[in-house]
Length: 422
Image (cartoon, rainbow, N blue to C red; front, side, top):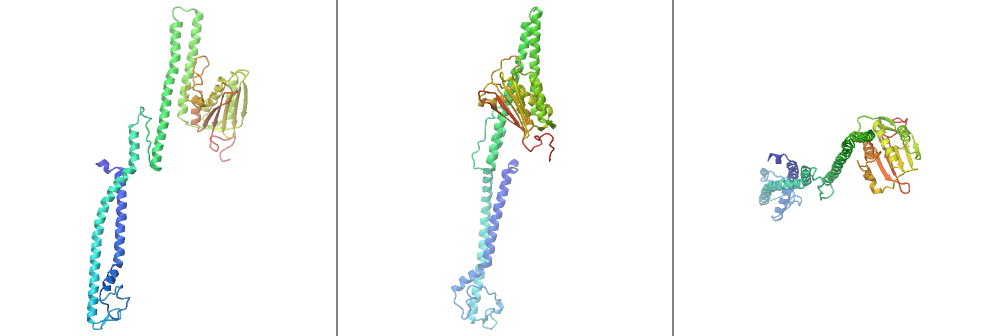
């Protein structure tokens, strides 16, 4: 009972009921005031129309106008109605007095009856108002109750449920739709997290299995030194791959946490430095085209370095013989990396931005990535408030073009050397 009395429905009922009672009471009071001011003249006029007229009485006095006449002055012997100047006989004066008394009595009785009827009507209206306010508050708050029950019932197993409120457009309809949109995002994030955990476990389990097999099978018995050397090289290679995978996972986790501090970073200079490191390991026939306009980005230098490095490494790894690699920065705050390579279906591009997703199934060969490069790039871009877009390049060149756009006018995208407010 206490919960009901302290509920929002009870508060709305009190509010609606009070407003309705206030409006009803005000209306009744206004009707009583208006009738009280003009009721006597109307009753007096109605009575005198059926009473014998007083000779010489001005029409403006009887009927229709109330003339206050003290009772002690009616038999003053003047033969005149006080205040009117009209002559009258004693019989007419008596009749006038009787008409006046009758009008006053009818007025009092009418006002009393009107007051009683008004109070009874107000009491009935109060009961109906409270019931109507309770019902209306329940109707208004029904979507809130649906949202509350849905939120209480949700768990990881039924995130697919939605409110789906069917109601006219309004604040509560927008609230329900917003809640459904939030559930969509939560379901997507939870699904991505589950896939990430499963893929991470699979990726980490594979090198461990390789290491165990190499140790148990390759080193069984008394293998010759040459075989031991090969097994040793294989174990080192698998260990390096596992280390790289763990570092990538840690980097992805750090980038998802956001930025703790920022500093001005010359993105063009950073791209030039990363290009110098990539060109040393890239195929000799790879054509590198650079168009690096000055651009300063406010962010974390280490994370931005990983962003550029992963984009360039991905563009080199998935290129083709005699292919091209194009890197550009613009004063509008855009970093663009484009490469030639296999033709990618446009529908497959969004999937490449998810963790452990590749264009083709993993073959577990040397130099093959873990499928975290572009997902790390997307995570670092989000941490810097940037927007990442990717699209497949058409045939015959193929490949992928990735653009990281920092919104113009924000402190994260300014030409190099330009200070805020300049």
